[in-house]
Amino acid sequence: MKNAQIINGRRIASDRIATLGEKEIFVFGSNIHGAHGGGAAWYAYKNFGAEWGVGEGLTGRTYALPTMEGEASMAHAVERFISCAKEHPELTFLVTAVGCGIAGYTPQQVAPLFKEALSLENVYLPQVFMQILDI
Image (cartoon, rainbow, N blue to C red):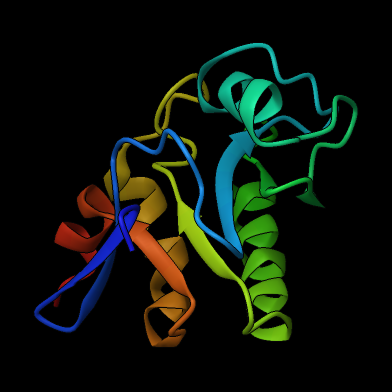
């Protein structure tokens, strides 16, 4: 899998995803209105089928995860993402450093929200999150 690798038992998503393999899903930070105007959201919209106006969930080869509505809201959105990943073991979710760009959060704030995802074989997290979660 060119967009992900396993290092010391940890599933790491690539920092640079230009194309997607079969059944790979690009997970990006969005806003609840699905106005994918910049960063990874724009890339997902232009390249992987993210739908304008859809701010959360699966569309095309993507999963929009709202990160712009506050930390508590983002935490609930991550919980819903994890539920989706559990419901779709046939898909491989490649998580970008959601919330750490335009939304303005640090990896130290966001990474702990994904702790439960460490046990999911179909979720690959960015290296910057794994460095924080690797306890």
